[in-house]
Length: 203
Image 1 (cartoon, one colour):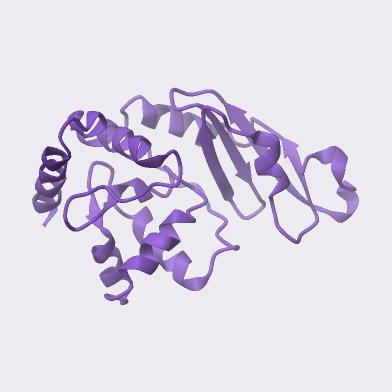
Image 2 (spheres, helix red, strand yellow):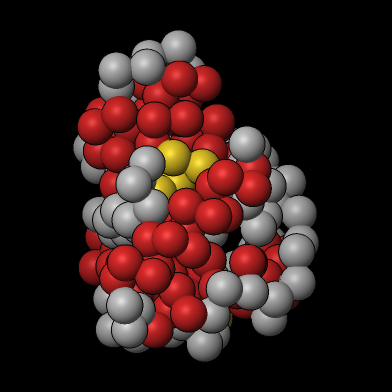
């Protein structure tokens, strides 16, 4: 919630900033521990997102573009096709241990590479947990910074993406891989073949 809604003397302070981009307005939220939330979209409800942070805690959200300018600049550079390092501290304190393992593993996938849900499950030592991995990524609080869009199905289909749907996932992969046909999806089979080719090239 915003500063006027809570007595700041008894609340934990979160800083936030918003900025425009080609994928809609982007909201960044930071705690004392690090970056806590990334949200974006054409119809982004900033007040609604802030009102849900953090659940069950006293907190005050204070707008501070300066503190978040480095992350904002990195995301802007990424959307322009450059490859900035998202090496800022992250606040994953609200995640379960399983979700944290998934997110930290996915954070290490290099830009321009893709992996499968099965690969992530195997990396964290839970080879049968493919579906829970997908569920954990659906709750990713830091899309783009933690690149869950780089994780696809083993058959070459894209799988879901909670931050704007499958079309947004295609768009981000197209920015990174140069495979622009992924964003158009004129032929789903051709799309899956291209993704399988990218997967094979990583093995």
